[in-house]
Length: 364
Picture 1 (cartoon, one colour):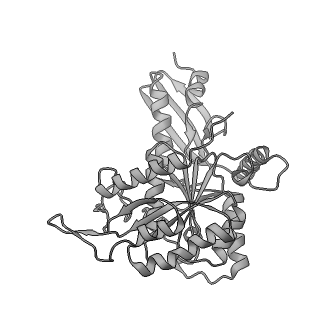
Picture 2: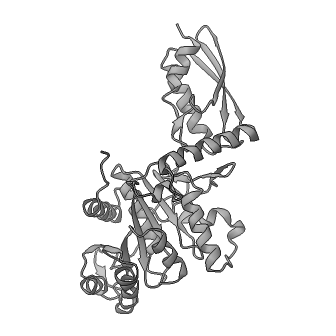
Picture 3: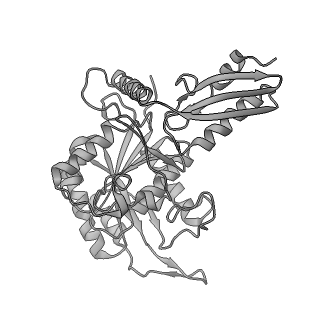
C-alpha cells in the first residue's frame, strides 16, 4: 500500500540537479494526495521556468512509480521570494561551515580537494578555449566532477562552444552554474546582453572573477579549469594571485612564432607566479585530408620546441578540425568532440595524463 511516508522516503533520493540536495530536504515536495494507485503532489521549483523542470519531473515520476503507482500527477509551482532568500541563506551557511572562520571561499580554502588547472596561451586564435571545453568534458567522462570558469572576460566563448543556451539560476544572491556534458560552467557571457562588448578596467574584472568563486555554488569539484585570456595581462595575474596552488597547461600551435609567444605565458607561470606547468598542448597540429594524408598547414615542431624550452611534457597534439555535430541532436555543441571521434579519443588521452599527473586528494 502506498502511503505519504513511503512517497517521501522514495523522493529523499531524488535530488535537485543544480543544488545536488534532496527535494524532500529542500521542502520542494508538498501536498501529497493518494487515491488507490494514483498519486498527486506539488513540486515547488526554485524559480519559475526552471531549466531542469523536465529532468525533475522524470525523476519524481520514476521514483513514485517504483512504489507501484499507476499514475503520477505533478503540479509545479515556484518558491516565494522569502523561500528563495531562506534557501540562499542555507547555501551560504553550508559554504561558511566548509570554510570555517576563513574569509576565503570554500573552493579556494586550504582544505579544498579541488585541483585548479589554468589553460593559458601567449596569443589568441590558437584554440585555447577549444582545449579547455574538450578537456573538461573528457575529465567528466572519466568520472570526475568538473567545473569551468570562463575567465577570458573580454573574449568569452565557452557557453557558445558547449552549446549552452540556458542562463544560470540565481537564488537571491547565490548563482548556480549551468551544467552541460557533466561539466559545471560559469562565464561572463551569461551576464552580458546581446553579445555586447565588455568595457571594464582591471579592478572591475578582478571583482567579477572573485564573485565567480565566492557567489557561485560550485559544490564539490575534483577539477576546476580556468580558461584564461591570452597573454600575460591583468586578468591572468589576478587569477594567479587568487589561486597560487593552480597548475597550468600552455596551448600553442605548431607555428614557430606562436610557440615563441606562448613561451612568455610559460615564463610568467614559472617565474612570476611560481605555478607548476603540467605540460604543453599543441593544437591544429595537422589537417587530415579526405585521402587520410596529413597536411602540416601551420608547420611542425612548435609544441615540441616549447615543451623542451619549458622542460615539460608535450601532452597532446590535436589536429585541425571541428566535430561534425548535427544541429538537431540533443547533445549538439559547436566545439565538443564526441567520445568516438578520433579527436575525442585524443582528448580522453589528455584527460588521463592530467589525472595521472594531478590526482585528486582522497578524503581522510
